[in-house]
Image: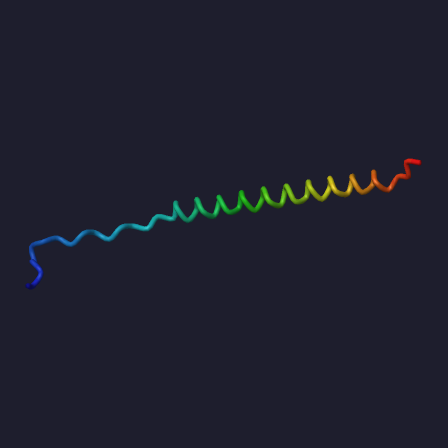
Length: 57
């Protein structure tokens, strides 16, 4: 009924910051890629609109 005093308790696991760092880097890369492609798409649309402004008659 009572816990055995001779039995050792399992040591608490150390929480390393490696996993958190991995997720932070992963999120940073994802946001950076999203910004990069958003800027590139904006430039493409701007060039396309400039070309469409010309009268081709």
